[in-house]
Amino acid sequence: MKVLLLLPILACVLTVGQGMIYGRCQLARALKQLGMDGYDGYSLANWVCTAYHESSYNTEATHYNTYDGSTDFGIFQINSRYWCKYGNQPSSDGCGIQCSELLTNDLATSVACAKIVVKESWNGLGAWVAWRAYCEGRDLSQYVEGCGV
Image (cartoon, rainbow, N blue to C red; front, side, top):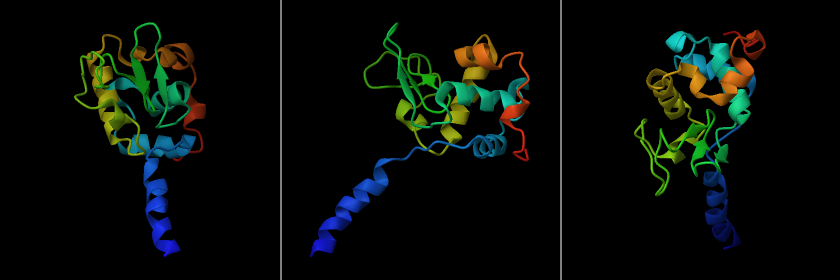
């Protein structure tokens, strides 16, 4: 009887968290597999650098922006005001998704949305403040070094 009572609790514990923190090379390999190496002219190292400085490779990262009330989501910190729907917040919903879809360890949705952001924003990867501040114009080889990509 005690085992039966614990099973539902254990099942809840196991299914609550769907995100993860990627390792640098693990993320580099996953992004390469999803077509990010050279996407829109940006090297894989640019994408890994951006993810590091936006979320520390954490797919469950969120950040509330006090200046406009929007929220950034996931490994690339994609903004709710322009790219995804979040509750009743106003949004352009450029990626046509719920923001919660950006918070899982399956990077396919985050990558698909990031590709839309790069293509539709006027400044490519410059849409990410972290890329402009930490990655743009720098030697980024350290972000993919030793990863076999």
